[in-house]
Each structure stands twice: as C-alpha cells, then as structure tokens.
Length: 454
Image (cartoon, rainbow, N blue to C red; front, top):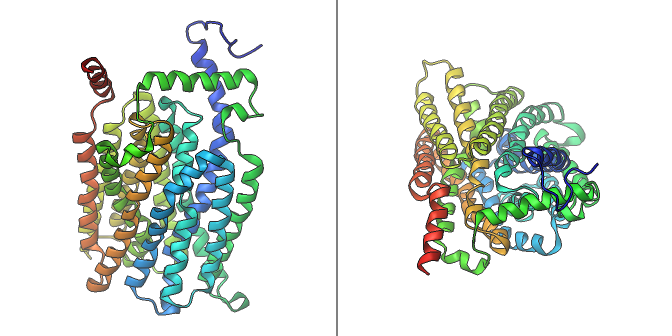
C-alpha cells in the first residue's frame, strides 16, 4: 500500500506521520555518510592544533608562524568557496564532494614534508582551497531534501560531526603522536598527517558510488516516497513566499551582509577554540599529548550534544533568534570566565576546563541554528551563491582570530587578552541577531505590505 496516494487527501495526521517516516529513511541515508565526511574534513583541518605540540619544536617555528599557518587555511577557503558552490549547482553534489574530499586528503598527507614556514603556509592555503565548498555545499545540498521546518535538526546532526571529530580526534592524535614517533624515521606529527589523510581519499572515491544528487534521482526511494519529499519541499517553498533568486543582487543585499557580520563574529570564537584548545589545556598544566586529547574529546562530546539538542529544540519551537542568541551569549560569557580563570593560579585547573567546555558548547550550539536564517531571504541560484558567500567571507575570521591569538601568545606568553576580545565579539553576534533579524511572522507581514504598496 502506498504511503500517500498522489492526488488523494490524507486523513488528519496521516500526512505528517508518513512524511516523518520518509524523512527518517532520508536522514539515515544521507546524514551518517555526510557526517563521516565532515569528521574527516574536520580532522584534516584541525589536526594541526595537536601536531603543533611537537611540530613547532621539531621545525623551530614560532607561535606566530603557527597562528598564521593555522589561519591562512581560511584565505584559500574564502577565494574558492563561491565558485565551488556554483559548480555544485551545475554538476551535482556527488561529483563536487568526490573532488573536494580526495584533494584535501592528498594535501593533508603532503604536510608531512614541510620543513620551512613558506611550505607550511602554502600547504595550509591549498588545504583550505581544496576543502572550500564542502561545508556550504552540504548546507545547500540538504536544502534540496529537507523543508525548512526540518532543516535545523538535519543541520545540527550533520554539524555535530565536527564535535564528534573532536571526540575522536583528540585521543587519536595523542595515540598516533605518542606511539608512532620514530617509526621509519619519522616524527609522530608526520604520521598524524599521513594516517588522517588516507581515509579522506578513500571516502572521496566511495562518495561517487553512494551519493544521490536530488530526491527525484533516488533509486533507494519508492515513487510514493519521492512524492512525499517533493511535495514537502513544494509546500515549504510556497509558505516561504517570494525570496531573492538572482545571485547578482547578493552584493547589495543588506540582509546578506548582516548575516555575514553575525556569522563572522560567531566564527571568531569557534576558530579560536578550535585551534587553541590544545594549547589552553597544555597551559593549564597538562603536557602529555594523550591526556590533552582525552580532555579535548570530552569537551567536544558535550559540544556535539549541544548542537543536536539546540537544533532539534529550534525545529520543535519553530524559533531561531533566541536559540541562536542564547547559545552565543552562553558561549561568550563562558569564554570571559575562562579568560579570568586562566590568570588565577590558585584555582584547580578543572574549573577553567569546565568554563572552556561551556564556551565550546555554547559556540557550537549556535552554528546549526544560524543556517536557518539565510533561507528566509534566498532561494534558487541566490541560495547557492549566498550560502557560499556568507560562509566564505565569515570564515575570514578563521584566518584573523588564530593569527592574532598567536601574536598575543608570542608577545605576552598567555592567551588571556585574546580570549577577552573574542568573547565580546561572540556576544556581539547575539546582539546583531536580536536587533537586526525580525521574527519570521513579522518579516512575512512586511513582505505582504510591500506587495500591497506596489
């Protein structure tokens, strides 16, 4: 018996139940694999934070060299993200994801041969250039499958993989760097790049055979199931009303630049925590790479729970502004507390680590909810380019924040001042949403009034 016969009315509750059943099937098919790819991308992006614990001494690099190398990744990201999403819209997701994943895995492994700062900068730039397009590409890809009322939870589930990468990546990096040092004459940090790059290449090849570009092409869905998905998307597009489709209008769209400012502020905090948590833990007196890895793993596990829970609750309440702002404020305030505690030697380090974990949870929990905002204003080609534009420009924070933190660490020997600055910037993200983004119902009223005036 079909799930919902096309053209036939459903009894009360029947359509919702059938739609939920189909979307469980869709989610089990899409999200675990995309999550694995994001784990691999995240490991290959941030393993430099753990490699740093050995790499700087081996290569005689300064903290500023590390900070610039960690951040220059995002310059490549910035330059190639929009073209990658435009290409995805033309050639499909699976070709794009395959290309991206294989290339970033190869570049990750090539970091093994770095001996000079220039080589380090070049490979980090290329890693960003090749990975560019994956994250915004997946965000765009999921809008091809999920209506808006289901997206925050889907986004949160996918993005929580970065937290899972932190859970796995810390202990894995600690084990590789501890046990593989000296094998075949190479340092532990070199083996870290090799062993975490190989799975990405293999996953990229698998993506070609596994992924499906759009619902109507899914052989793993029945015709009735395809109809359920397509009908949900059609109803959602109709309910959202008129939105911008022309990508050329993005550069003069004030809402787009507001979204860029909001996400930039949030990513200042996220990138700071991502690249400096191992250093913060080490500064608190934990020197063994394995111990640093396990402490980071616990913090990221809490972050994963926060991302999924906040995204799911946002969907259930159909509310975005406070779910984003509340999480960002919690993250910023916790970072202020962390900065204050780092200067108090008499307190047990575990208290500062709890503040660090709370900062990570708040910051990460805001990210999936944010990606509900662009869909209020953009559709079609404008959405493809707009998501990439927002992500690429905002990720310049990922270049600036780690570099500035490195300069501050070089000059003062501490990261405290940098954490204070970043915490205030993160709280600013919450203020911008509350002041600049109106409730969805009010926005629809404004659009209707504008149409009547026209």
